[in-house]
Length: 171
Image 1 (cartoon, rainbow, N blue to C red):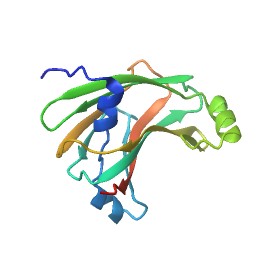
Image 2 (cartoon, helix red, strand yellow; image 1 turned 135 degrees about the vertical axis):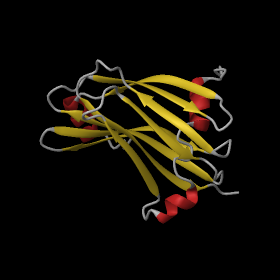
Image 3 (cartoon, rainbow, N blue to C red; image 1 turned 120 degrees about the vertical axis):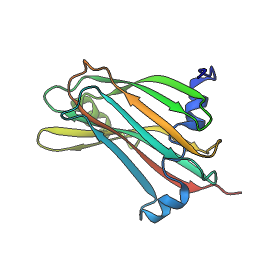
Image 4 (cartoon, rainbow, N blue to C red; image 1 turned 30 degrees about the vertical axis):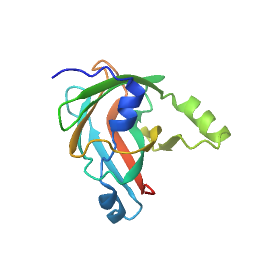
């Protein structure tokens, strides 16, 4: 399998999560979105793979990466490797570093009307959702493989997920 050398932002914007659910599947979910999550508790490795249906090219999607962090061991920055493999075997990947310090996130979300970062807290952990891409329109139809990996040595990450919401594109 040959790695594509397209500008990573363009490749992942056009491909990544492009239809984790097809537009018709999302409309059946009630709020127009779908969510996938993998817990790392009791597992070795910090890797999650999601098969995504991108057979509906009539939607534009907003994609969020979601992580569950331990309050006691959360890193200040969450480094992730995001890899996408198309139905035809084309591969694109990028490394992203997302802010994950709870106090910094609280400060940012309290002072900003920007909804690209959201947090939800519980007793021993907190969930962070980062807007990853907006306005994505599928290019290639079929099932895509989306893999998200964090370093195995990273402490404080107990799960990773993706959330996708779609709206029909005006023709």
